[in-house]
Length: 121
Image (cartoon, rainbow, N blue to C red; front, top):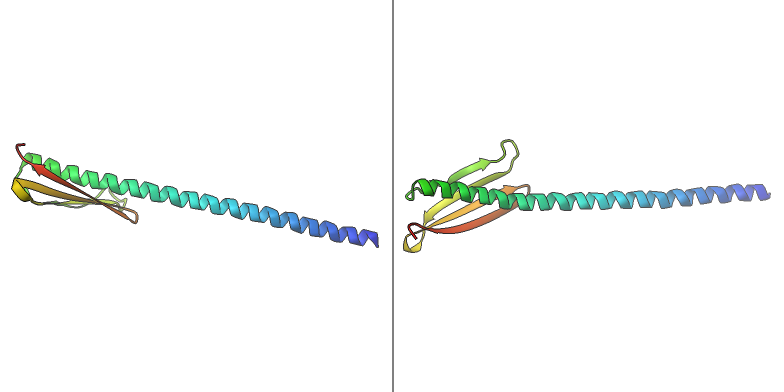
């Protein structure tokens, strides 16, 4: 009779150990997924900013060549095939200034930069 009780106890102990191990594994996997999502969001947030800067610099290069240019920068995918884009619009501002608004899109993030340019200082 004692042998049967010990077999039951061993089975219960094994189930308990397996349950604890399973909880630990699931917890670690959940933590890693959360870290991965945070890393991806940080990368996309920063990437959208860098793309907006690229749009701004693209427009400033055009303005440097021709201060009367107001064409704007069309939506440009960079790098090609990535799905990440930048664009810029250029308009006349107050007192002879030029307003440049650049937009960068990476993942689910959209970042906007605005600059005011005065020609001839």
